[in-house]
Length: 198
Image (cartoon, rainbow, N blue to C red; front, side, top):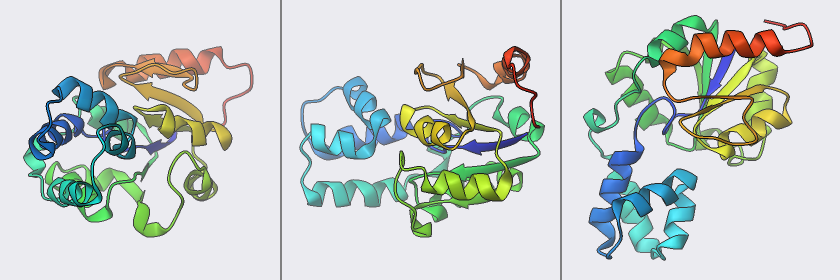
């Protein structure tokens, strides 16, 4: 089984730190929960909704890149899923240096064969170009993400989809904790009519 992962909100629980930083920086009377809700759709969604200026966006992105890795922990039990896979790859909108720094800090870098980020020049999700590239190279089985944005391109290229801590019609199945993954995956595979390739 070869898995494509999103990073923020899927491998690491980064959104609480982002939302806290956002609230501190914009100096507007907004609730943490409201900020979190919009950030989880996308950063650009939050920037537009809260009407940030280009200077505020630039400042936020600089501060985001400097967040202490201790505030960006991996989700519980994720390492068990990473070990199950033959290969793991990441497609994220986050910069490569930050992703690598966080993965190394938590001793997770060893599990990943490749990390695709904006520096690689692919269009942003939900454009499927980066997924097509990774699927051709690694014959992917499954994509795991916390937003529809992560799963739509997987569906376009014919990969099974798992929504983490959310629900979507695009997802083939859902989990709320990585401890559930193995049993849920086995049940899902058992329901498929076509022979499973991996």
